[in-house]
Amino acid sequence: MKAFYHPDQTKHDPKFYMKNGNRIQAREVPERSLIFQRTLQQMGIPLCTAEDVGMGLIARVHSPDYLSFLKSVYARWETLPEASEEIIPKSNPGRYAATYPKDIIGQVGWHLMDTSCPVGAGTWPGVYASAQTAISAAHAVASGDVNSSYAVCRPPGHHAYSDGCAGFCFLNNSAIAAERLLESFGRVAILDVDLHHGNGTQAIFWNRRDVMTLSIHADPACCYPHFWGYAHERGAGDGLGYNLNLPIPENTGDAEYMRYLDQALETLEGFAPDAIILALGLDASEQDPFAVLKLTTEGFAEIGRRVNSLKKPTVIVQEGGYVSPILGENLAAVLQAFNS
Image (tube, rainbow, N blue to C red; front, side, top):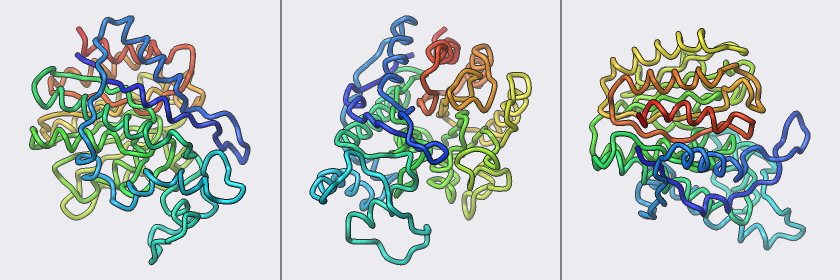
């Protein structure tokens, strides 16, 4: 196993997060990647610097107007009178709005889909480096260099749509990694075990059958992203039946979670993928600040063992999982199955 990271990721350093109408300290912070890096060092897993291969794979996933917006928005924002240090939307359109706005206020509302993605001066270089990290990890597996790799991606990506950011996510790292794998493999499955539904990933592949998306997550009836992630959502067109959602109750622990995981893996094996992306959220932990699910460190170890038992080339892309006393231990528990 090899791991990949790029130091520019720390340039994205958000300061706040909205919770129940209150502005609190951000949870998706650079400290997360430092914890992951220390864990890799303790495990003896080589940590490689991600290479910059340009925009090609990113542009397969994200729209030109959105990428142009992310690159330029902060410099434009700074020219406004009384501009805030970080950008948040004033208003959001329905997704079927007829006209793309020309002014910056309108574009911020169009592309920033909620208040959890404040854009700062270092956001674009940070999210770009995170995407390049996912690409490097996928390339290591696709080229046959290793059978498994780990991408230390922060900010995460699975809530990002082709044309918008949400839920701490700006570029959809797992989807971008899948595009690299498809250059070498015919069929790719993305298994998302984050606490929250991977709604952006689902939307990107909604009409496709070359990538199957599977997500085990807290029931969106009572958990973010609220509007997506229900069991009846199965894809459409060519992608009908190639999306699986398994919403689970609050406070689900290890034993019950594994029943859902087995169901997901059975469906995944029916798809017969040539390679797998494990979208690894560690926020299902019993000690995560979100405190919705109750997985233990041994539960995460079992996730690693069961996914590894499929014996498929695997790219592990870091999604959520926030600062807690056992964040590094939970990562190590998953990676150990692939590093033995």
